[in-house]
Amino acid sequence: MRAPGPCAECGAGAAARYRCPRCGSAYCSVPCCRTHRERCAPDARREREREAAGQGSPPAPAGAPQDIPSEEEEQDRVPPQRLRLLGESEELRELLRNPHLRQLLLALERARDKSSLLRQLMREPLFVEFADCCLGIVEPPEEKENVLPE
Figure (cartoon, rainbow, N blue to C red):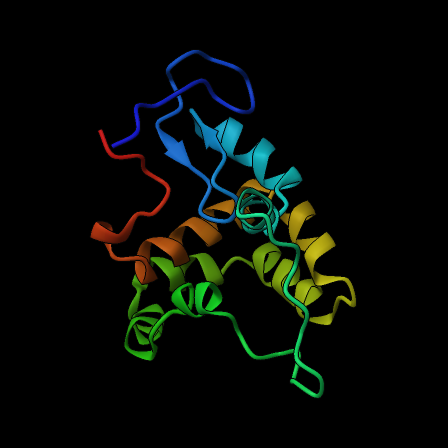
């Protein structure tokens, strides 16, 4: 069990209780999480692990499809039965009644550069509330990856 260290974003000593599920960086609060999310390199942890093991990036086999998810990506997939819970949530329905949120979601659907727009939308409080609501529904409480063990 690893003791919490300083926050990678603000440097607060021994206060980093949370860990980014994408890259493994530690952070101490929601504001630091948001700051980190803007700069997070999702493949950074995998690259660090490969470098530590003395390996480079593994070459893709010739003719292999590029859209097959890795084992790590597969673990991040939400099972269909949990996705169905989104349709049953009254809180989510209430959020989706907001015309501003609907416009944001429509813009995201139509955007060519979805990841760039998504980074911008994560600064919009209404969109963050929507994202948190969705995650709260599909992520079981016992599987909160980003909380460090105490």
